[in-house]
Image (tube, rainbow, N blue to C red):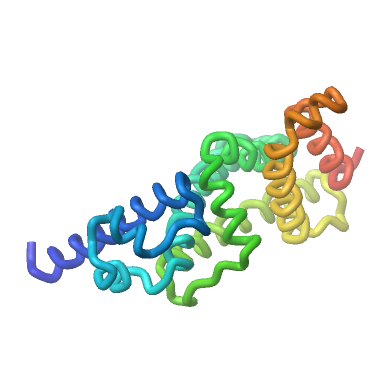
Length: 212
């Protein structure tokens, strides 16, 4: 192995160790309560070394967020590729969001935090580029499903896949966050479980896009 390759491997190792430290602190201590000093201490490196890899706390927040997005990508693509029936595949996409939320609640909330707080990074940021690549793949699959549904005569002709995709992500993500906070209160007051609400969401969604 040459010097250049060794340095690159070392750089990647340091970077991953820093993200590991940031992730642990964000999830245990809270994002707003975690400082760059905390992260440097956890990673056992100097602040100079930390800032040589990440220019700001926002970059670290985004790096942890993209780790979760990679897991979401794998779950989503598995749903898309394992189901042949169009209607079932669309439902499978929604189920993938719920599955991701159940399996990785900390990552899910991190993604919600990034969106809600409009966290931005440089346009050439490696994590941003990776996320955009995955988003393009998922979006193209989503559009492909809806176009297939239109040809099969099961999806309304006026439905716009991109619009629906954005609406679903915002609605369902917000619903899952809020239902976690208020699940016990809703169940106690109305006798409705979170799973029942999800089924009702499916029904409303399907009634809006599919031809009876």
